[in-house]
Length: 430
Image 1: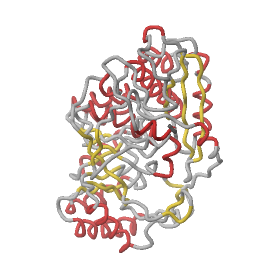
Image 2: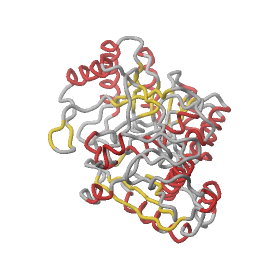
Image 3: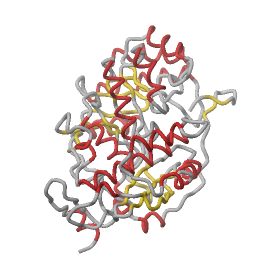
């Protein structure tokens, strides 16, 4: 039996017995000695994502054959994150991988300098892999270890999308407004109930607020007319607007009832007054948070209800446990959570486990990482969904593993970041 067919015929097992969904997971055996697990090795893997990024993975190995998989992909800093993960090896080898909270606290608090996107992404990758090990050791999916399900399925949203591939992993975006509107209608006909699109026009890496607002509002009006009043539209600005432009955009799109306006401005700024001003001057629902790195960053946004939805990224906030803590903080103030998730299947499944068991995690993004091209990278174990919903994963641990042979075919590549500029040539936010 080959790897993929073995994976697709997942074995049933009694409670407490280990399941072995396929190669790359621990070898099948009657029962693991969970109390005597030890970390024996740690390896990082950099994989060219085929766009402007590289994926960053970690595998943590144990003395009983269980291998945990985690992801720490960070835009523009993947090589740096991989180095940060590697530096943690000496702190973990010989330790019990099931002591997840203690390892998290040690890695976060131990160094003199803590936090930030690089260190938190490295910590996230480690933490996700440790949960994967624990789930495999006890034969249960991670969400069952976190208290069981809060829902029967998880609602998803996708991006307005791409058309057919031009070549390899490259995809062609719609060539004009009409083609993009048709794509929105196609997504609706496919059964999606919510789609995100960019509605702040940027041409040739240049940001000009007046036409960006005018053209974005006009485009949103056309999309709303095409998909009808009950289809959920997320309007993405991606932090490109300054405060005054953000206020104008939000007020002008209110009549088209977006589900929310995302990253209307740089709300992640330490100057919380900016977020207060935007909230005071607009009524449209607001969402932000993909660039925040811990519960401490989310606290003022939640406690003052400056946004309606927060969007923590499980690969940047410290992993599964920290995402749960952030969600609990948000729930206290009746704020929903929609995990940011443009990375690969590892990020998607880790986020899905949290959404499954967390009451206010109501909507999950699946974005640029959801490409069937990568089926072989995970032994064929791609994330499954239908008509805008995903079933709860039932394989032990995370539910997939990385094929190192396939990963080696797409080694790390240097990628140039692309700054945005104002018409006078000065640099603006991206």
